[in-house]
Length: 101
Image 1 (tube, one colour):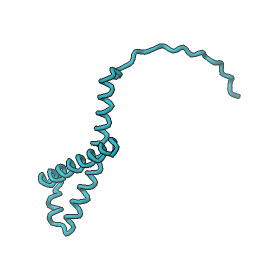
Image 2 (tube, one colour):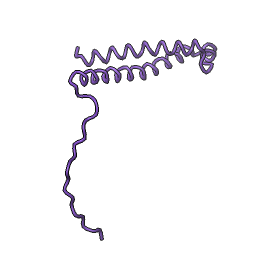
Image 3 (spheres, one colour):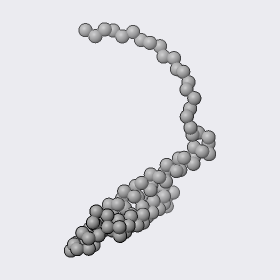
Image 4 (cartoon, helix red, strand yellow):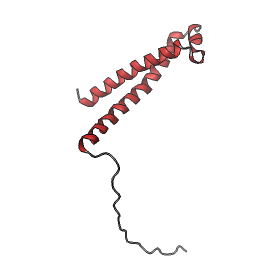
């Protein structure tokens, strides 16, 4: 399996695990009275599943972006390519514009 696919799968699993913890915490703390709404609903399992899946998609995307960014940051620190570059003046010849009529 290519490294990028392995990284994506790992990020997706990590994101869905984090989303599961987030959903459990939101329900346990009864944020916005969600626990009461879920516990008294006849479609509670579907509501929690949708809440978990949608948060899992977001958390997985953030996890993958963070992993890719961390890889780029490691490469910059290894090659000394990070940080601001010194300004270099560039001379550009001015062109005369013809007046618009």
